[in-house]
Image (cartoon, rainbow, N blue to C red):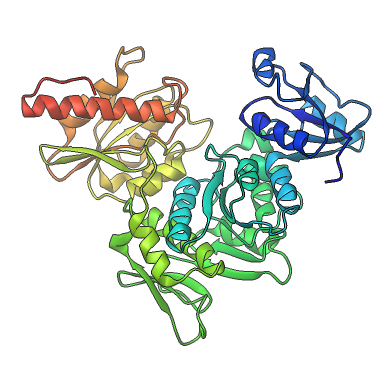
Amino acid sequence: MEISGRHVLVAGAGVTGKSIVPALVDLGARVTVTDGNAERLAELDGLGAELVPGLTEPPEDAVLVVTSPGWRPTSPLQVAAAEAGVEVIGDVELAWRVGQLREHPPSWLVVTGTNGKTTTVGMLESILKAAGSNAVACGNIGYAALDAVRAGYDVLAVELSSFQLHWSSTLAPDAAVVLNLAEDHIDWHGSMDEYAAAKGRVYTHAKVAVHNADDDWSTRIAEEHAAEGARRVGFQLDTPRAGELGIVEDLLVDRAFVADPATSAEELATLSDVRPAGPHNVSNALAAAALARAHGVSPEAVLKGLREYQPAPHRAVEVAEVAGVRYVNDSKATNPHAAAGSLRAHESIVWIAGGQLKGASVDELVRSIGGRLRGVVLLGVDSPVIAAAVARHAPDVPVNSLRPGDDEPMTAAVSAASAMARPGDVVLLAPAAASLDMFPNYGARGDAFAAAVHVLRDDAAGEPSDGH
């Protein structure tokens, strides 16, 4: 980090650019920022950097390129930097290096994986705060890790994407976990193996490598990428072996961070302490507990933190119960793997699904949960793909595919689902697909679902709707 007076190029003027530039300027670097979007670039005016649109190679005297995570390794600028021998890092790697300049560097507890990252990081933050730590959740959740480091937090519960990890080289967490891995972002990485390798970077320098013993990819990545000498800790939704966390009857128990793992265990919480409910969230809670216990947190703080955790919006949140039917918003289930976890949390479901599958297969998902389905309501561009999978693997389940171009597709979807549901059922929005074909983002999709449910509830109660 000897960059005072030296030239650093920042690639990307988005959210991370706004975090990167002030940090580099404070370190005394001479900063240039480039972006293909001139309007976005102009938003950084006044931060002390030179703004140059559309660079495809670094300036001749640049000693470092700090890139926004979305820029692919094959982008002309990144390729030119590599050919010129200029190091390219991301904002997370910069955050790590800046943190090492502090007299007391912060502890990093890092979470990655295809699904469950934000929930796990939220649980972890809650546990750390229950233990009295000066801790914050940061990273790929809207609060940049670099900003958290510069704000002086002592413990960081960090969510990292595969993009961010690709551009990280010396990051050395105190403990890290790959929750799971399923097909995603293959267009960016080029292959599943490259995607897994990017996730594996979280273990390269980690002191404690936590892995999901129920997930083959997580276990494999830990085996292949954990540093020699790193402590390996597993977790599973069954009785834990020595050195693992797991479930005994209705208890979450720790047989890793105890005096004698061979003969003893610590009770951490009960299944009813985990919210949202469902096996995938119990798995997330075990992962959060493992990272917290690696940091030295007591069982009592784990219990208190899990009980106090408030789930983030659009993640298996119950919106309302109408005529004995529960309506659950899991709009964040944007791929088949995430939807599978959500669907397995309920016994009898009317499933609202559809959107952009981005080439992902839904056959295994439908095969595994077909017996739970009362009915299916489909909307979005890839509805025919899901409908075909239901026809193959659950042919007796009725499917209502909404017509494209419906003015209020989510209102129509909720109405159709309500007509299929019976008391005791769950109407579950778990789309298994991205939202951008119909909505600005998954949050807008979830808001539309909640609004439609509120109208349904008010109509059932005979109340005038305020539109919510």
